[in-house]
Length: 132
Image 1 (spheres, helix red, strand yellow):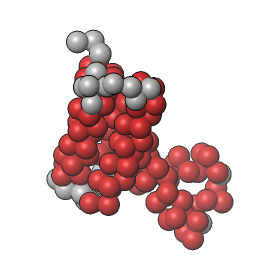
Image 2 (cartoon, one colour):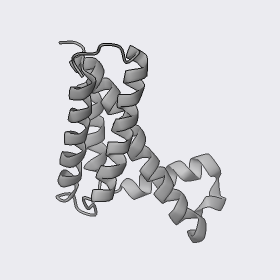
Image 3 (cartoon, one colour):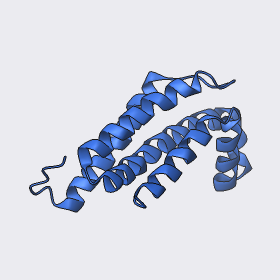
Image 4 (cartoon, one colour):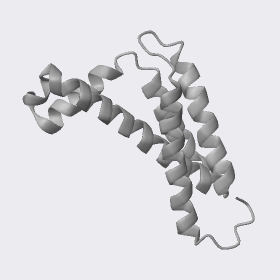
């Protein structure tokens, strides 16, 4: 049962980020911290913000897929959990002021979950995994 604690914590972390109506400000502050004030020029900020936000989606769901696979002891169930969570997460965002659910984000999340699935496959050696 303890194997589910990291999965629950990471799921709540993602859910909390999705509930933040000021997430754009968070990515702006992160970019400013990483690259300094020159990134705040509008022609640089928008593309950089877009890239960092999509990279965050991808990474969050790669980690979620890995944690779910580990907790459930099944790559397939872990991957399914990550995909279902991506769908619910984007639906949840439709109720958050200033946020919107987006099918392209579900695709990015699913791509990250797929990477998690592949990494878990390589870790297990892809040999006779009957639980996938």
